[in-house]
Length: 168
Image 1 (cartoon, rainbow, N blue to C red):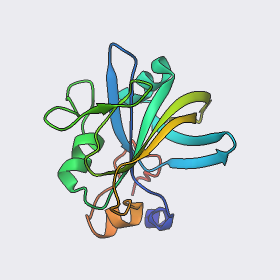
Image 2 (image 1 turned 60 degrees about the vertical axis):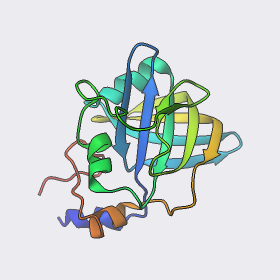
Image 3 (image 1 turned 90 degrees about the vertical axis):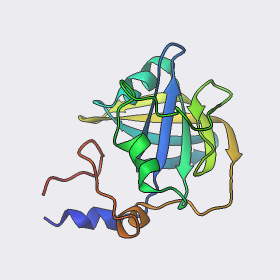
């Protein structure tokens, strides 16, 4: 099987983050998707092994930011290749909170959505969270980063916890 076929899907890269009041988590995902317009709902898919997954479950809400093409590999690495359990992903950078109290950074972000979890689905290694959008804000005009751009331009790799990871 040629796992690179998955790189042909037109998806973006996102940071999903949440705070349950005592703890917060953030991670990069390539599985953010608008589901409906009435009500406005999106879905995110998060690996059960990610600290962020548990925070979203406890909080019942999350922030979703679309990463822009101005993001570099250190930015992707900050949110995508480290764990929130032992690394402050928002340390040393501008941090804001959504109306639901979830952290996000406007750096390298095209927009931010504040979402309340209305449904979950356990799909084995990952959990799908369906969020109703409670607030949304455009943060800039730089093009959102696609998964194809991440692989072709930044030469990024797919980490084992990603929903699109296939062992080669």
